[in-house]
Image (cartoon, rainbow, N blue to C red):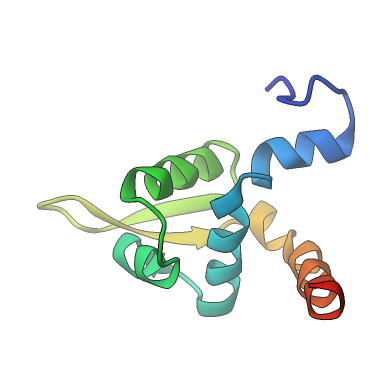
Length: 104
């Protein structure tokens, strides 16, 4: 994936994956609450449009940060959870949380 920031830099590459407004909040909720269904994520992220949430989840899935498992066939409904790659972001989210407490 080419960097949206046109830089071959690890920070820019990370931002391409998790730098969108709702992506970090999706990850936050999956860390705090474990696997969640779409409607539970949407409810916890009050204000996110369903199409925006869907796009963020698909992008996080493509990047291997989040995975989905089918819990209902008709209509198809999914539960989302962090992969190993996603769980590796734990220290990053903790650091952002602590920074926000002090400077936010």
